Amino acid sequence: MTACDILRRMLRVVAAGLLLSAPGAARAIDLSVESSAPGPRTVGVDLVTSDGRTLRFPDDLAGEGTLLLSFTLTGCVAQCPPSDAIMDAVAHMARAEGLDGLTLATLTLNPLDDTPERLEAERAHYLDPSRIFLTGHPADVFAVLDGLAMRPSSGEDHTVRFVRWAPGDSGPSIRDGFVEPGELLDWVRSPP
Image 1 (cartoon, rainbow, N blue to C red):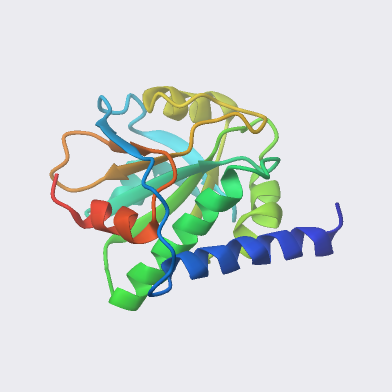
Image 2: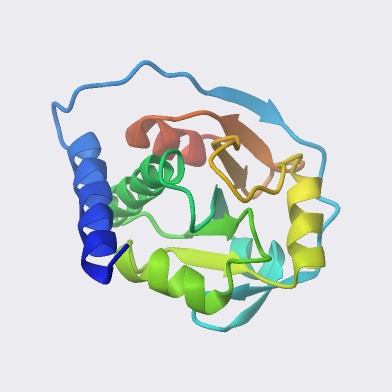
């Protein structure tokens, strides 16, 4: 696949996300499921951003605000692009509303292949610049995934999941499945 092919594919993803967030856009059936996960067993784990910064998970990401986390892997062409489009649409909507204190992050499901450089080249470079793409030492990433009951993956077969950490939450809240961006943003803003 050439760089032009990747760019075309990513532009289609972004365009789809913007269409989903447009007023009067067709609404998909909500196939999501919300649950509460036990508190993460991964407090204090160091992860690396696509631009090479080291951050403590989840503290450096959530801080005093809310963290919305999604998952990706660079080889994924079926489930990750729509999930990325949803996250980009949420970023666009949050910016348009002037919503402060929201951090959007995406964690790789495949730290063995998804280096910071690869995440930057194949995901972060093409998507909303406010999003943070995360990888790290495989043992650290696998610990985070395990703490969120998320299976590592190197292929297409994985759960589409969004995780929210918000002030006052007793632990992370989880939504599985594709969610309309406005509904996801409402869920992020809702009290625990």
